[in-house]
Image (spheres, helix red, strand yellow):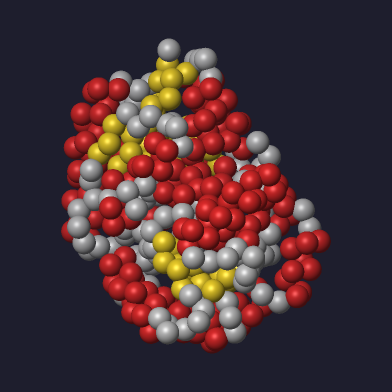
Length: 386
């Protein structure tokens, strides 16, 4: 039986790939393999490998690779540890196809190792643009190392082909994260309400805003000024009674400084009657539930552009990290100053925005949405190796 190996390094890419992995796991034609590395094996980031296993998946190989710190040097050392771990993992597992998502440094390290082992690579979310992050270069490098490409929009499929990739290996799949909508929530509502409140301390029926910011690695200060401006813009909303759900930044260079700034901001508001909740990881199910219940999402996470519109959630996209990435009308771009961010958040929470959200279909709101994206990708992966 042919073996399809998924390599995951963060809660984000796992949440997107999990539905595809489920389809592979059910197939009699292919064997699912999973390698977990990077943030998944770090207690500081929630030890999210446990979430993978609690979802019922077997993790075949665990590679501890995250070097303490958030500097360029620590990132390069982390990449080296991923490659070192994969040297043993590939020899052990002997996969027939490797699946990699996105643009992070551990994804580039994984692609490089797979090329040396002459293992074909299937890449998800290639061709996209994020001008404010070094991931932009990583993503295109992974595209050139990969054999098969699953593009989230037609324009990104065209971009991959324009980079010289064989059109027969480029598939328009949509974004798997965008196909998860709120339609399945009602049946699980009571269970998820309780689980969410226990995890965050926030009553999901009260107004709350999700704050999700990661380093803008192409900026000299790694986006610290953008984070400060966003926190300043949120202050009036705390005074108005909005609760704030803060998700931790990822492990890119600059993340430690951002986390310290967020902690200081939370301390300043510790006497407020409106709680600010900081979580290392919600897990995929609770994260999508949060998108379903929140009033808005603000920051520079790709989730605001790709997943949030499928839940009819307005988003404020701050600064340069996602600059150049396609998005729909529910996403409002804001320069990295507090006044612009405040105006954008006011527009996101307005009655006019609510009217737009309720008046259009998900496919109209979200350019990344494609029905049955995960099952389409899974079937193509099986066809490739069989």
